[in-house]
Length: 108
Image (cartoon, rainbow, N blue to C red; front, side):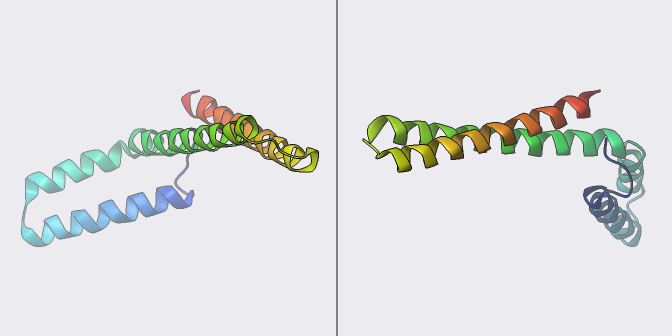
């Protein structure tokens, strides 16, 4: 779960406070109220943003794994090259598992 101290949370809050100050300077009270509502729901918004980033990382890892599998399939590698490709696939699988754990923890 993301807390107020998380760097992503601090950046998100600061950005919204800047927008609030800009709305204040413009005298746009409706926009100010919308920003305040969003700030009150910061955990929900930030959690969705964080989850979206995790899914992007997950997809990127899958694409990289597919490329490595294709390399293993298409090329007759010597045993050293094949072992290196398999090690890279294994590392990506471990990274993907960690991301899945974060996604599940984020939903809890």
